[in-house]
Image (cartoon, rainbow, N blue to C red; front, side, top):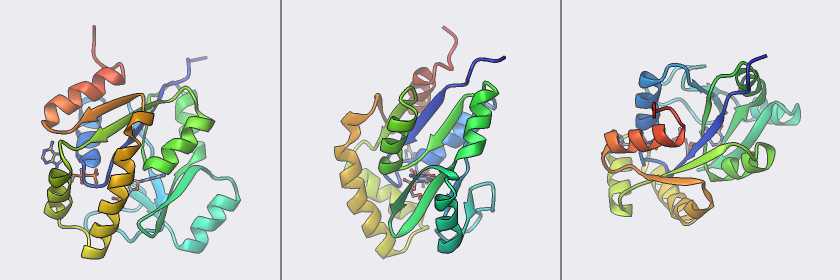
Length: 187
Ligand code: ADP
Ligand code: 5GP
């Protein structure tokens, strides 16, 4: 039987560049399996069902929680987000490296259920730069931006809980650091 794959958790404030970095990581390392989360948030332009997220009504999401179908879940900026359990377990059992891109409360839950997972916090070079990136992305309403910035302060305060902190200033350097932490670079 193959050894179990390694589980990595990537957490960081909204707008820090998690999606951008993860896309680059997966382009370089197609062996990594990225978990697709369930959410009650509305799709943004260009987001496809089953690719970016599984988009659910509140009722459907609550049924998933009640059935134990989520490995972890949390509320973020008035919406619910969670990791479907079965595909994570299947890919780990098949020996694939598995990546979860989730917020702080979810990362804390995974620390309990998967204590061997490696947890990386992606931090911005400064709070002002974080705000510039969220606004520059142009996908969120002012209300949602304010909620995300308030939550960002809480998340930044918790970065010491993580196994490693990567600062997303230069994207290439952040990618190299993440690859090193995920043990993806040849020695
Ligand atoms: P998240 O997934 O963490 O919410 P995104 O990947 O959507 O963040 O990135 C937010 C914005 O910041 C995007 O417009 C993206 O192009 C930009 N961005 C990401 N990484 C960097 C970087 N290293 N330097 C400058 N801008 C970046
Ligand atoms: P967004 O709405 O910008 O796609 O995501 C908002 C936040 O939800 C981000 O911090 C993202 O990491 C987090 N998130 C996405 N999927 C999950 C998940 O399955 N569980 C948890 N706990 N957070 C998630």
